[in-house]
Image 1 (cartoon, rainbow, N blue to C red):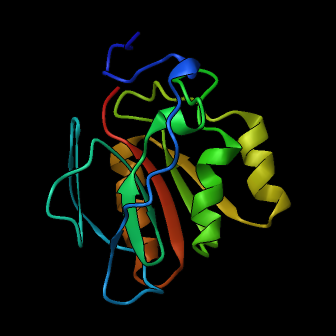
Image 2: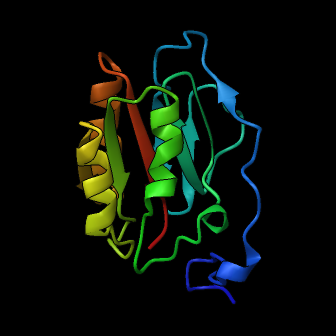
Length: 148
């Protein structure tokens, strides 16, 4: 079953994590987002746009919600942010979508707090702006949802 923005919502349809990610020249720097619009996120180092993406120091990849059973509610799971931490992100930006339909449960924020990782939860356009500012000087990671 698909939700209104095209995500498969059945937790029974989980796939394994994609080993394919795109790198930037400086492996310690987070890639910049060059454009965001409804259903489209263009990222430095990636020729094709993402619909939803994970960005972290050294690269980026598609954010496949089925890997962790993410749905709009309850929202972003601790497993979604773990990969950002595995790539040495010290700050995390979580986008809630263009219309803020994606939730961020307290468990996920507590998971980050326990690891002493600063978290920013914003609508996608604002999340992109903050992420790009932080990427200039900080090892930042982000989860970006470009539709609802």
